[in-house]
Image 1 (cartoon, rainbow, N blue to C red):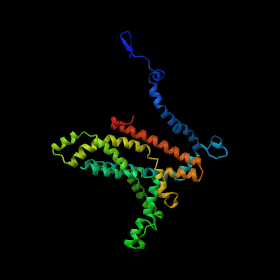
Image 2 (image 1 turned 90 degrees about the vertical axis):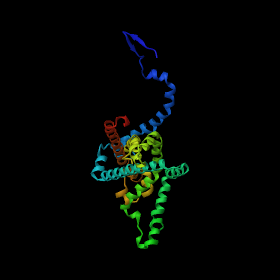
Image 3 (image 1 turned 60 degrees about the vertical axis):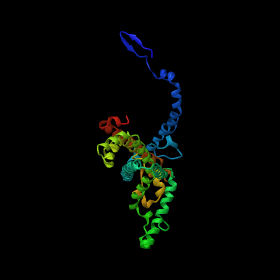
Image 4 (image 1 turned 30 degrees about the vertical axis):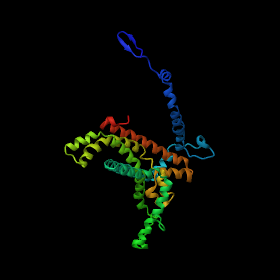
Length: 319
């Protein structure tokens, strides 16, 4: 690198975007497709935010529809709809994140402790298989388990305890929080386990050998070595998950529940409400208002959690 000596001071050449573009044009060319992708599918669609402040109708179009300001947001909160949607969405995602990560960590530790390579790889493949199953098939699987007349569960109950023991799951909202959480954990268990297993295998084996020499048993090695060294991975995955805490898994809820109005008090989330507003009621303003609030709240939540983590664990913060 050339330098200019002036009054005993070493000055670096001035760097700006033009100079960087000339020097590293190959690198800029490599990231160009990614930039085009994000601009096309992430930034240009943001003009649709204007829907949230209009009483949209198809005759006048986006910018010709009456501007109503915050009326859509006022209706969402005054009617109690948003409170119910927020409650369901946040509680479901807390359960997904908390229980999901717990079982993934446990399975990752168990697989890392298995002695046989063949058995370990077979168990890992079996747990990973549901990740590649379509949500449509998950919905069909759930229906064949829970159907009142021919479902596996009701068939077994009727054979063991009589016909009066059948449970009409699709008319009983109280069961569905447990059903949805179960299927979410079941489907995501294998993928999360692989992530934590990769983090566990990267831990220096000499730490375990030293602990074993000092008399530590397996449980003590896990609690004193494995789990503390997994904290960076847990924090990063937690930050990513918190960013979407208001973005419920629409495909999971829709394929399991569909448009069953009886189950909506316990299964309706922001994503399913937006879908009904857009596809059933054709209320683009209301659906956009709910989606905008969802994105804004998620952004504020990520920034807040990252601020807290930066104060507690500066080296683990995203920025």
